[in-house]
Image (cartoon, rainbow, N blue to C red; front, side):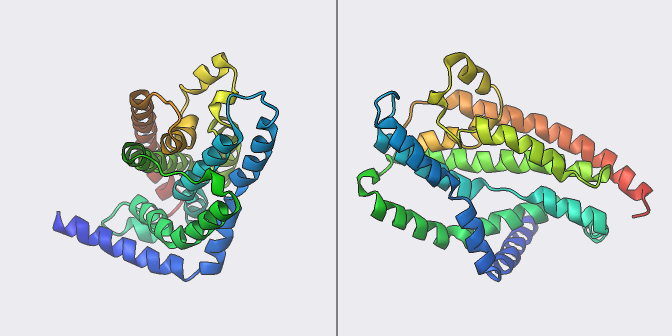
Length: 262
């Protein structure tokens, strides 16, 4: 157990130092995640007509929560893994007594801490521009929201890492993620709260993994009514499915990779 914790601490400190080296690039990545704040203005203005159940301030708070969730759940492992498979760098990782997935995982985890200062600055600027949107989540909602964000990140990472394993068979595994991202964009709650969907469409979407990547944790943060246990069980269920597919692809992919002369 001590050895495992020491390895985790070492990987976290190494990748945090690596991420901090690229502060300017990291700032650009944080700014690229401000898309929900743009949509916030559009929906808030549209809600002034009274045609939606949400008030303008509710849209403002929701999309701020979406921005926060996105800062903690963004994932790019498929591009790193694809490049290292194509360049043969994965071979050196396979010689070491640790599954390469932990390098990618702790790289992502450390990046969360490195981007926090930039995210806090943007949030402070947001509240300066929209003081009427300031709210303090209740302790229960905040705690459940943080748990949901952690689970959502793990699910998003597992999903993308599973797609990344197709790099053992194709040079463009990232194309799978780009296609998948279209569903993620429209069904996750990033474009609009799921309350804006027709009832039957919303009920169908809630059985997919997408709403639990953004909408579910964001709703917990702002206090929107959601089925907590259904959300948590759905995340765990999809996580189990992707985990089983991931392990199957991993063992099959290693045989394919060694067959290429790695």
